[in-house]
Figure (cartoon, rainbow, N blue to C red):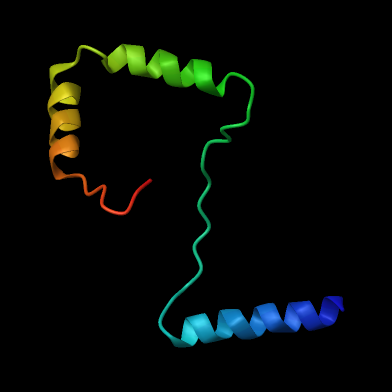
Length: 70
């Protein structure tokens, strides 16, 4: 069973590569980690009254496309 799964995965990855794609590994913060929410709050407080941050946030809100989001 394991060999069959491994072969399917290899075949799928080969097909993706043939179509011009390549695998990329991305490491992101672990949102389940203890203290994550507190660190988010801390960093948010640091930029809360920053003029550049407010300008960027307004721009993002203006150009965001929320169509189809729930």
